[in-house]
Length: 120
Image 1 (spheres, helix red, strand yellow):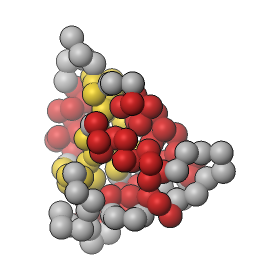
Image 2 (cartoon, one colour):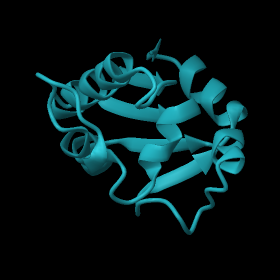
Image 3 (cartoon, helix red, strand yellow):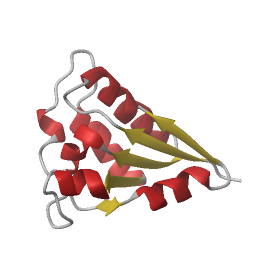
Image 4 (cartoon, helix red, strand yellow):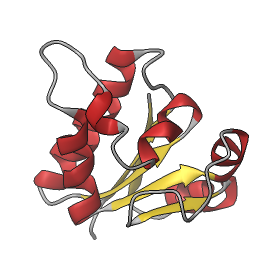
């Protein structure tokens, strides 16, 4: 049975180390061939917009834009419906490949057989 890793990033530039940890774990797992679903919630929702991940800086951390690209290439990236709405982000605003979905979809993914969910 294949395992799935569901990573929820709840922080952005407001808590850069926590944000970078979520993206690093998700992209490392994706690069290793794990089925990854990265959820952008709270302040990390901004990274669903084109060019936003490239503005993130944290010393000794891989560039967030590159980490996001790895997950987009091999896995799934989802922006939280409510979080996106609070920031006036709609489906036409996000990077191609990013979907907007809500809690029901997150719960479905996290509770699927073989899934492991991590929240940062």
